[in-house]
Image (cartoon, rainbow, N blue to C red; front, side, top):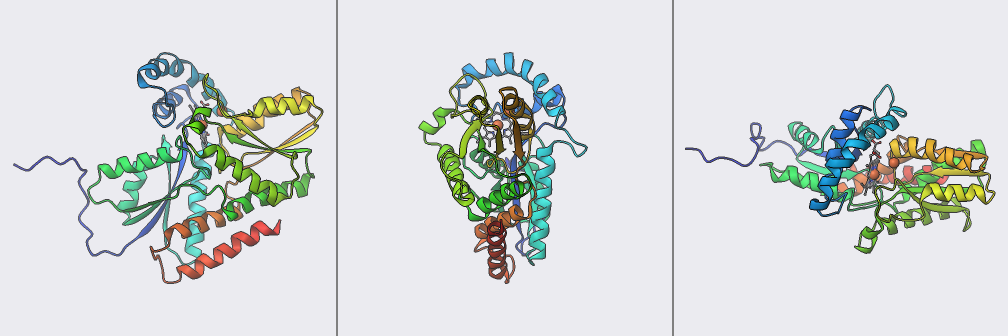
Length: 366
Ligand SMILES: C=CC1=C(C)c2cc3[nH]c(cc4nc(cc5[nH]c(cc1n2)c(C)c5CCC(=O)O)C(CCC(=O)O)=C4C)c(C)c3C=C
Ligand SMILES: [Fe+2]
Ligand SMILES: [Fe+2]
């Protein structure tokens, strides 16, 4: 009698086939539709992740299932409906376009690397995209989370999903992981480029606010590097833009629950600025590489309204990196640096030097 297998069956073996390198761009995830039912599924998966909510299960699960999943889905669905597009959720649409643009840019550099995107919660799932990459012959996979700053709540959770997939896979490809790129020159240059392009058209504001997604303050004391990395990104960006102290502020948005989160919080800070007589602010969200609910609804709708209501005169939201060419170049450079030693093509070192030069030149132009 054959022994039962704990592992999924493999397609006919490919021994002797050439090595194939792939990149999996991973983002947080989004509901399948802006409806309460889709939100319940998405939030149920998201908020059950121990990386995201670190409260003991015995206290958290009754609260999650008894209250939060009965009330929040309807409210969040209305917010998602206000930003939904013909292409669906902006987060998913931008992430898919980033993967497409990166794949094309690598092709043009003579590097035939497979590039796909996946979502930590919802679809397309990390497991389904890893299966798809394997089916396409990928033998080496670079996992690249679209979070520039490392956090246990986001980056490590993506890694958990990859490990869980590997734990039930027989023939595991070689895997590599990008932890962070909060201080990468190409990333900082691409952000500076977007901001300066905005200023060329609209002039400079009295204050530039850099709003990052928040996390519970406790995670900082437990050793999560997110807060430090966000502050370093902000320092490098302000230096790169030549902004003097006081012109550029760091805030944290999207507070969830009753615990203390990182401060200062975005909305109260903007209200205070308006009350102090600041007339124009520009807000940019460097921790989000794609526009999404948190930027388009929370910042560009809610926070805008709060600032103007408190007496502010002009509120400019500067969009995320999305598919800006300087960002795709920076992303390619980050990926190629991590692919070193996985020779995709003999000309890889040359392509690496070229993308580095292009990313730095694009950043320096502005
Ligand atoms: C419950 C705690 C949460 C933590 C901790 C958290 C960290 C965190 N999140 C992002 C990026 C995104 N979050 C998004 C939405 C979102 N975030 C939370 C909660 C926590 N996030 C919730 C409940 C939601 C869903 C929306 C809602 O009901 O309010 C998104 C947008 C997704 C979209 O579909 O557009 C992103 C992106 C980071 C970077 C982060 C820690 C650093
Ligand atoms: Fe979040
Ligand atoms: Fe939010």
